[in-house]
Image (cartoon, rainbow, N blue to C red):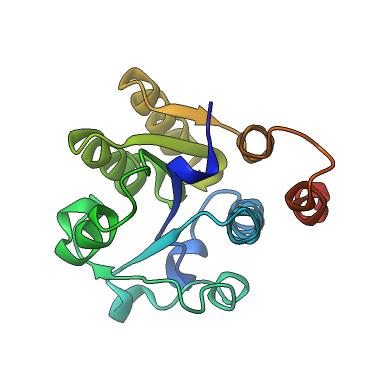
Length: 183
């Protein structure tokens, strides 16, 4: 079971020019926003990345405004951990952090390769199935299947958030609930 103190949220490449081509981009963007809001409420560290920002631009506007004070190294590699600055941020997280919650694009490229990179350094990747996608639905589906074959945990945002919250009635639950109920 997930515990907030064991997790960090990793946001990979939901950049404006790329998201214009992503299958279900609006839903994916809304779910990433939900995960960012909830991670901040639950006090889970957040790390982001951009892929070749010069060419693909900043995050989509609705996510860009949520990223104040979130480190976002730019990368040209597909495995975020192959980026020295990103790996340094991850290894600087508290020793209790053993799980990465992955959101972003593209499922079959950067999400998949980052999940594999996390496994190599002993961090368990959890992929938020409704907060990742690819340019085509088939690549998204095949990417999820490949990661499942690698024993990556895959689940919807709501399942992951309720697992992190554990119970209702807490101040965190009450603060997160409006974000969970947004569709």
